[in-house]
Amino acid sequence: MALLPLTLMTLPDDQAPSKVDWSAAQQEAIEFLIDAQENVTTTEGGTEISTGEWPYEGVYRERGQIPPGYRVGGTAIVMRSILETQSEQLSKLKKSPPLIPALERGLRFLLKESVQAPRMGVGFNGRYDVRDWGHIEALETLLRMQQLDRVPTDLETPVKNLITTLIKTLEENEIKGGGWNYSRSRRGASPASPFMTAPAVLALFRARELGYDIDTGIIERALDTIENARLESGAVQYSTNPERATGEGFEALEGACARMAVSELALSLGGRSSLDRVRFSVKSFFDHWKWLERRRAQTGTHNPPFYIAPYYFFYGHLHVARAIELLPKEEQEKARLQLLKLLWQVRDPEGTWNDRVFPRSACYGTAMTLLALKSPATPLPAEFKPVEIKKPLPKPKEENEKAENEKAEKSEPVSL
Image (cartoon, rainbow, N blue to C red; front, side):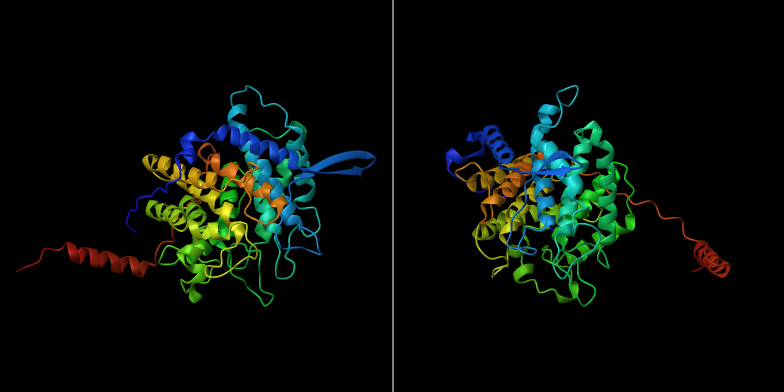
């Protein structure tokens, strides 16, 4: 794949990144998120416990209610965005202060709901189940809390235990053949979805980096499913099925541009991609961004011609921001400026970001934007280096003798 330069879009001078007070915008966004937390007070053993959540809201419901996977995943993403935004200031302190009340309430919510709530443990219900999305986001958030030394002392053991349980749950919920998907067939094996599998792989990379026991076979199979979904054009299939690739609709570059970067990021850290492929995924996002924008905050989900769902809008921005960190230093600044221009262009008058028609999902969009803004300061997981394979068994004696004879014949002088 040839090297392709990144091209910059142009916006009015008053919207240029250099003239935008991003620090004030981030603070305004944080204040919105804290105020938007939905507090729930429960009583356990006569003691009142206040937990708080930031549920993601979409069209999917379970018995008319927001599914627990959306509640856990949305809460985890908002928590992580606040933590990452505050991490620079906290790193200057000798000792991290206690969590702000909103984050502690969110943490207690994750501890209570991430795997213990109904339909949040091992398993899959029906044909559509978003629990693993919640598991993936909760895992990434808790791992970052550990890396940032932000876990309260009295919750260190429960957090560590939950991380271990989340890892085991993802391993148990692996699709036959590798990877994960929120949608499965009742008839048997189902393909993995790269857009869900890639973030799961990245979270497992981070867990492995922090010393958690990870089944490397799970990771290898997940990487296989992402790699098998990659088409000759550079696009990535919506669901891994190389035998039924068309390169159209879902599989066109326009339809795949929000999931290409995260796929190449996971493959790159797993030793299966290249700079050219990562660069092309970033370029494709910018080249076809207009198709994402046409679906932002619109009704419906996978509408033609490229079947882009609105909820991939900020998903794509975050993971492109992460992939940019793999580009050469001289290319990173140009790509970041382009991303900043696009994000400012879609900022709501209220100072928030929302890619859905639901007011509640402004928490998700705003949090994903903050995470994208903080990507340069947020370390990527360490590269995945599988345990070295043991040396192969020695060949049978007759094969060794044959090889020695052939070697000897080649070394003898040739008479003319």
